[in-house]
Length: 97
Picture (cartoon, helix red, strand yellow):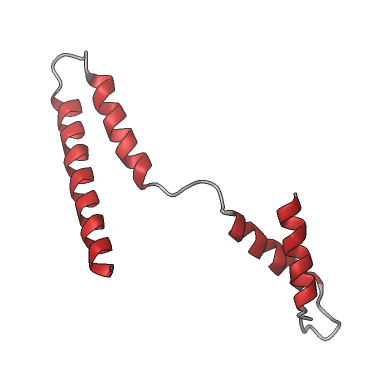
């Protein structure tokens, strides 16, 4: 399975590089400006494909809330009180919102 994922990633990188190269060359050497938007669109779409998503997943938000809740439960000696009930409560509150 790992070999299949590596092969897929390699093919994606190859085709992305071909499209980026084509678009950059066409933008740089374009004599008529009629199709310039087409190449800028191709370039920006390939770059947008590789950028990470700007939003966090629901699991990341639940983990963050759970960790913040645990840090608020610190005792006077600096030790964090861990309890499964408090973490479950934080997770339930996050999913209900």
